[in-house]
Length: 81
Image 1 (cartoon, rainbow, N blue to C red):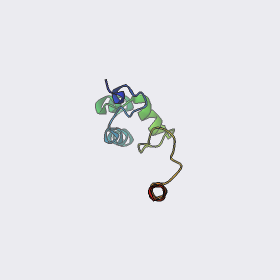
Image 2: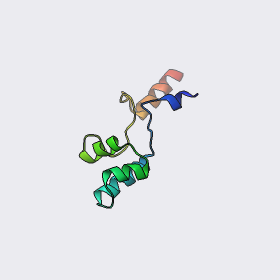
Image 3: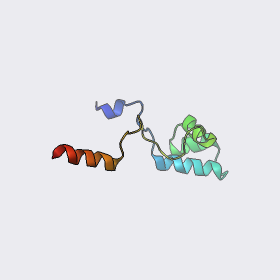
Image 4: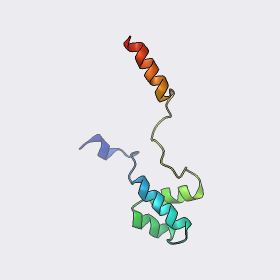
C-alpha cells in the first residue's frame, strides 16, 4: 500500500464537499448530521468549522513554512551559482 493511503493526517474529504455542507447548514436547508452524511465529510470537522474553532477554508497539514516561495527561489538561484 502507498503511504498516501495510510496517512491519518491527510485530508479525507473534498474541500468542495465541505464547503457545500457548510453552505447547506448555514442556509437552513439541512441539519448538521444530514449535511455531513450527504456530502461525505466528517461530522466533527463540520461542527468545528461551523463553530469557528477551525477556519472554513482548507489548510495545509504540517508546520508553516519559514520562507515564502519567492525567497525559496532566490535561495535556490544563489545555491546553483
